[in-house]
Length: 171
Image (cartoon, rainbow, N blue to C red; front, side, top):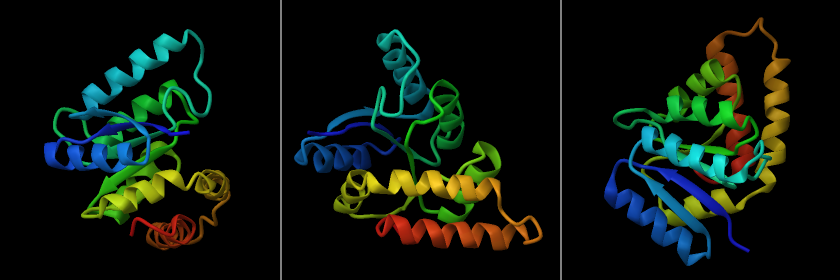
């Protein structure tokens, strides 16, 4: 059984690479070219459900390029999470530490990361590793209880190390 994957990627060649790699593993892929289109497609799918979406609705995972025109991945993530707080998100970024810091500050949670550039099989492995979802929930509970005597930089480094350990791929 394949996963439903929403992708926001402004580089057409990268988007094609995502599609080929994911569809080869029997996943259903919806590609959008920027954050604005991604949010619009997500909302349309939520509206089709006719109810409040649950954890794996309307997509099992949304892969967002961190930097895109019109609306970046972080802003798109905020809007998606406003519709479905449980949506699994993966940021594709060359700047994982900055991306993690921004997700913690602006989304109040840690999301999965994959560092660009990457091989398509790494993305597939990351997406198919659904066990990471439970561990990520634990990390986000830990985030809420973090020792605030540590510096912001120490906390981000600690979170990054934990995320690297549970993801096993993507860095």
